Length: 289
Image (cartoon, rainbow, N blue to C red; front, side):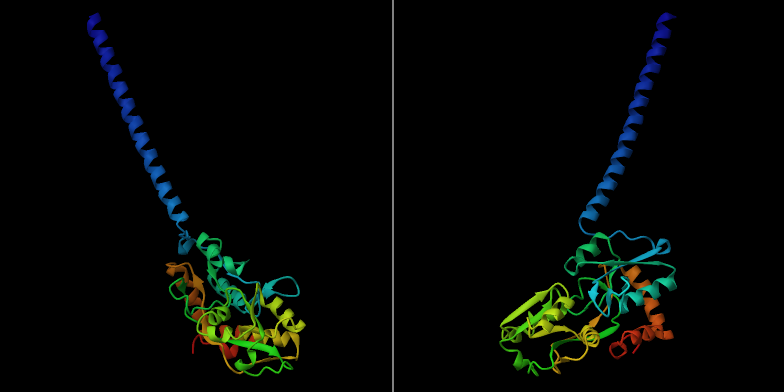
């Protein structure tokens, strides 16, 4: 009898040990699976992918912009960020029930901001040409040209007159890309091509005589000249032509489609042109035409 009871106890103990090992194994396997899934997600983020909220869960739109690029994005006299592109974004958000988050960025760091998810899009006089494969783009909405601005009494009337002159341009701008690309021969005729972080500083140097001309987007040139009064002219010859679009993280077609459909709706009902007229850009609009 005692032998039978001991055998029974041993059997129960062995079953318990085996059961415990099985439970531990299941727990360990589950933990390993979770860890593997988290590691995969971490690797994806480290490789530069952007995590997006599902369409029906989105409540905000964070727009990255250059705060020194009027009339598309800038700080007004009240210390508020405003501009043509920000007004468009505000209207899109109002119609979709989103909150607009205006995020000024260093233009040199815009790609890092986008890939990290700090911003949802780049919307600020952003040139599509030459960047077609780097972002998921909205339809173009503005036709733009790159031009030169000079003082009206500088005696500069053509590209030939720029030879031997000091010319300013913004870093990482379309004008700089043109001067380093198709217009490289023209740039080689300058005595110096001076790069600026923003166009306001460039215009200050132009006014002071530190540079002789500045290569710039025509919309920005018109705004700067209008705000500074007489004394400046735009050369008739164009450095380059381009189009503006809204740049989203490559592959983020869902958000692009949402914003674009609302933008097209605004073009259809006249709101887009109303905002363009507010900033004197109606002549550059290509959306809906």
